[in-house]
Amino acid sequence: MCCTSANRCRPVDDRNSYRATCKEPVAKARPPHRPVASSRLAAGGEIFYGWYVVAAIALITTTLSGLGFYNLSILLAAFVAERGFPVALASSATATFFVASGIGGAISGRLVDRLDARLVIAVNASIGAIALAAVGLLREPWQLFLFHVVFGFAHGSSGLVPVTTVLARWFDARRALAFSLASLGMSFGGIVIAPLVAFGIEQLGLAGAAPFMGAALFLGIVPVTVLILRPSPQAMGLAPDGVPLAGHAGRTSALRSSTAFAAAIRTPYFYAVSLAYLCLLGAQVGAIAHLYRLINGRAGLETAALALATLAAASTVGRLLGGLITLRVTVTRFALLLMGVQALGLGLLAVTFEPLLLLASVVLFGLTIGNSLMMHPLLLAEAFGTRDYGRIYSTSQLVTIIGVAGCPAAIGLLYETSGGYAAPFLVAAALTMLGFAVLALFGARR
Picture: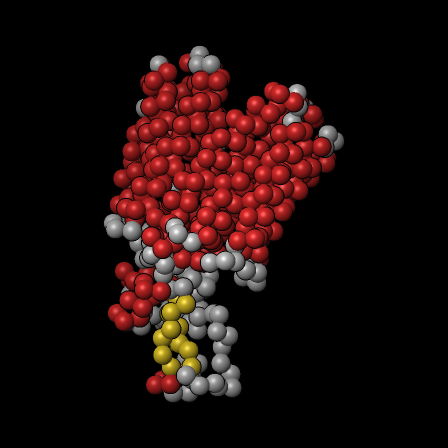
């Protein structure tokens, strides 16, 4: 308590955090930007349950990234090698995955504001597991596209939108740290699960490995969602960061302080963030899709393989550092820093040919990957609160899908027309800086 008398304090909401503020100044009051209670401990000295939620979501994101995002290129290679689909056809089907994922995220964003998020995640993960288990049955082009639509929709409906909605409800002062720790799973999925999937398909074939992939997707998401995940701290008599719930009046005040969906989507800030991350994530995903081929052509197969491992490792380190940096730097400034570093990394990749310099450029690029993805929802949660966060983020994410789905093909087209990767990666760097400019100019005007 910040005052010497209980009746001198009143609960005040600050982006859904519950804390006491003094009616009159006292000698040793705590800084007003942090809650009085520690987010590490709940009342009674126990570990705040929100950290168990973070661990559960880290496992979910590990499973989703390893069997979803990072698995797409592995599946594409199998479709071409085992089913004889043309590369262009298989690549087009992969693009439909991202479109369906964006639509699924938009729908789940509306559902998690009305239903228990655990139900949304578990049901859609089960659908995705069934689709993945049946992938070995694909023989015709229409089946290939149907698989990517269903799998993409389920992936988006059980992925970032619902899990970040839950995280945003559980944390306020430590929200950036919680997001960074939970997103470690996105790196671990690429480091641990994707190589196992590639090995399984190589040994068993697509049809033989498919049931194991489906079972792994189900077991990695559904049990932990049902048993550990909780939709909000209020459901357990808590407030964000582990402060005991002050009462119904405090909870109602917190909800009223959040921005409604209809009001949020009319603000310049919403469109600034959405456009900035359309540019940033589009350039990022496009560069990742072509990175292996770029380095293989300039420095050979071994360096290209090492570059992919370096990219995943740098992404993991970047997420850990990001959680610590955001304790001292505002989210907007950190987001701008990440954009600048990504543009630098892409620019160096465009003009570098020496193996060591290429790997150094990959490190710069990799440090931004995981954090940039999580800054998007974090910026929106910080600005608009949690009441309609699911709908706000999912709508913004749907805008960014234009870049994510289109940039890999655009970089490929630029490569064909320019005869190399210098021009495409310089364009990707410029696109990133466009996002930087939009966020820097309009990001403070909420």
